[in-house]
Length: 173
Image 1: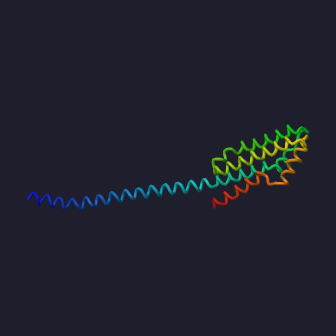
Image 2: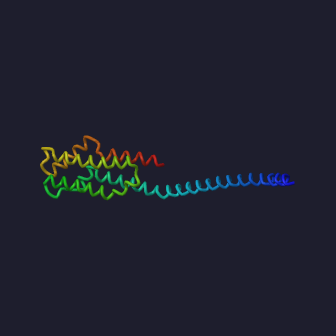
Image 3: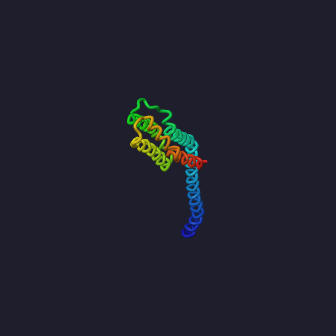
């Protein structure tokens, strides 16, 4: 009788164990799915909130590039004297201030885009310095003329960077 009782207990225990194992796996999968759903909703919510910030960063970078475009900055900043070195320093200082004002935007844009914006800034400064080293450039007005003539002959670094920004923003949609 003891063996029959043990067999009966074993027969009753098997369905209980099977039900327990199935319940364990079911609840584990359910918990995993709920975790995944919560992560997905959190990520989706973060994207909804981050998209306006990213677009604003791209807008600010586009504005920065427009403001440092040689043709625009030379019109906006007029020479205070005829000294070309003072004017060159004033323009470069203005570009650097604009850049520093927008430094925090690098968080929201891609590394490649930030690199291109930085390269455009440096190329613009280099262009102004190169024009200042020209032997024909002896006054601030002549510096403006040389830089503007250079911009008529080729595309400004800001324009190339602005094209990249437009392409990258179009990929966000």
